[in-house]
Amino acid sequence: MSRAADPMRLTWRRMVFALLTPATFALLLYTVGAPHTHGG
Amino acid sequence: MSIGFAILVAAPPLAGVVFGYLSGGRLRGLRAIPVRSLWLVWLAAAVQFAQYHVPVLHGAAGLAVVFGAVLAWLAVNLANWPMAARIAGVLIVLGASLNGLAIALNGRMPYDTRAAVGAGLPAGTDTPKNVAVNERTRAVALGDTIPLVPLRALISPGDILIGGGAFAFVLIGMRRPERRDDDRDTALAPAHAGVLHPGRAGRAALHDRRPA
Image (cartoon, rainbow over the protein chains, first blue to last red):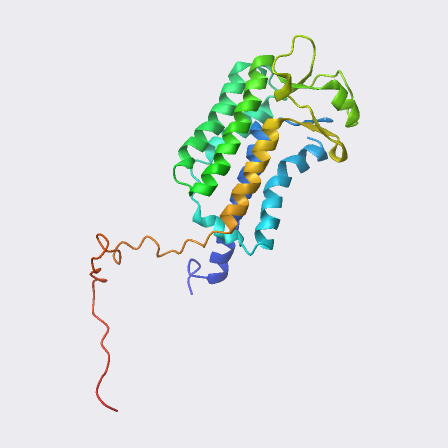
């Protein structure tokens, strides 16, 4: 079986892409959110 | 960056993930919502981070790049998102605009000194991003005036809108059916409603119908 067709590899790739969206929104909060914290 | 700040940033999307699972959604559902031009968000984050070390970015230039890049990213993506996710995106636009307005009017994000003391923060000190409210501060209500005592933090109405939008987007995305790889299979798509699709090119499937 080729590496590209490996179902486990595809599952991990899909999971990383899925997690990218929540991570993007955390990044968004970092950029345009403006909380005042101690040392923040 | 303090632990309180890190929790504030990560909590809304993580809460979206938790509630997404609790309501029967799955992370893979997020693949059904296209997210494009991520480099704009990374650019905004890089400039925001650089503000701690590069004083020239404290002014209008940094503000324009950070908020311009994020609003451009949302403008690029909003049209491609389903209606519910679009509403979440609009909440984020509104929150970012309110924060941007308060910063633009005062140079940095103003914070309420009395609320800061109540949240366990030192009052009167200025940071690269925050300035204490004084008699010359404009649009005080848009500043960091809402205390979060357990996190020793103050947040603004704009932060609530951005956090709420991020939470809602992740929750909505997780509850959507996953996009399948053959969703864009135009070979099987009919030209318009009521028309039979022609099927794929190649040999047709033949079934042996001879009596056994």
